[in-house]
Length: 226
Ligand SMILES: Nc1ncnc2c1ncn2[C@@H]1O[C@H](COP(=O)(O)OP(=O)(O)OP(=O)(O)O)[C@@H](O)[C@H]1O
Image (tube, rainbow, N blue to C red):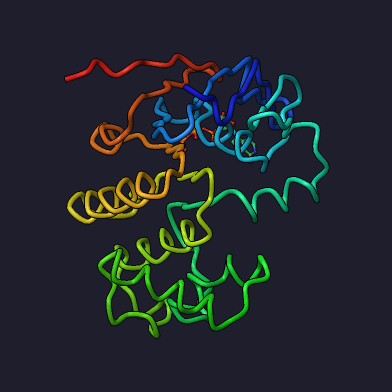
């Protein structure tokens, strides 16, 4: 198995509050990894360090052969835009843009022209059960619809890695399962590696493996084949 992304002995503090204290985890290419653990244990901080949003105060982040933690802010921001996708719990769509323009945004930011970007975005509406909603704005979508538009936007540029922080946290359980089914199918369909923070066992059950964070350190559980 090829390791796509790895944290080695990562430490991170918010002021005098340590959030990560020697966290290590390796994510294999193409897998879906769930990060679980109690509230305040460091899950989101770990995700943000792996995604190059936060820079660890000690330890290393390896993306294949590349060291993320030694890059400049500009290099990390280009890398995030070109190779990573993100889904968060709330409020990620740009309210002034239509749903289709929101989905096309990563392509437009990466220099794709408007017509092909909008065509590519349009294809995601059928795939994610959003047919006919292309011209709605975020205020005119249900929570589950808005989250599927956010998912389409995260995947449209075919990222190597998808980072999802409580992607179903604001949804009821049925809608959450629908979003997870679509997320897993779409990611597997294009070989995107997924790192998913969740406190719900039902959501973690979609993952290949679970990493448990406690007090800023990680234990990885291998799934027992069923
Ligand atoms: N911006 C911040 N400023 C100060 N302390 C922070 C900040 N963000 C997180 N922390 C602290 O860092 C620690 C880890 O937080 P983190 O958000 O990574 O935990 P989490 O496991 O994702 O929690 P939750 O499940 O509640 O979202 C906690 O003690 C938290 O209070």
